[in-house]
Image (tube, rainbow, N blue to C red; front, side, top):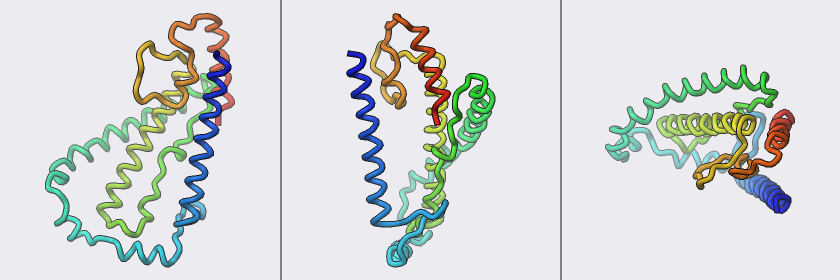
Amino acid sequence: MEERIKHLLNQISVLESELQAELHQREVKLFYRITGKHVEFDKAVGKAHRELKVGIVRWILSSRPQNFLAAPFVYGLVFPLVFLDLCISIYQAICFPIYGIAKVKRADYIVMDRWQLHYLNFMERFHCAYCEYANGLIAYASEIAARTEQYWCPIKHARKVLGTHARYERFLAYGEAEQYQERLAQFRDALRKQQ
């Protein structure tokens, strides 16, 4: 039964990767090409984007007042987010080499490219930059925590948990005590090879 589950999980991973690659290729073919860190649109698409941009004054006048009232609470989170970024990066820099865990590449998670969209005005780009950073940082921190969990305690919970990371499904079943130490060593070895 265990081998069947591993086989199915591997098939799911392969299919998810294929789907993401195919969807990305379709987007790229239709709209843009990536040159280094720069995203280039066809001239006609770029021109259409600039024509669709809503001016900042019209954008402010059409915005809901609640958005302005909530802004200090939304953007006030930038301070704990930056602090989390600093702490999690220091943690990884110190602990992962000690544990023999391959480091998580921050740039794979925090991707700041929406500022290149010419149909967004300054405020929309500002909002996008905040969301890119916040969500990318949470994903980056989640992967660091997931690798740490795989190193120290790769055991599923007894209760159903929402929002588990991608590694969780491969963890040991709750209460699966046989060969725990050997299996733990296998989980740790896998982290050394991770890229």
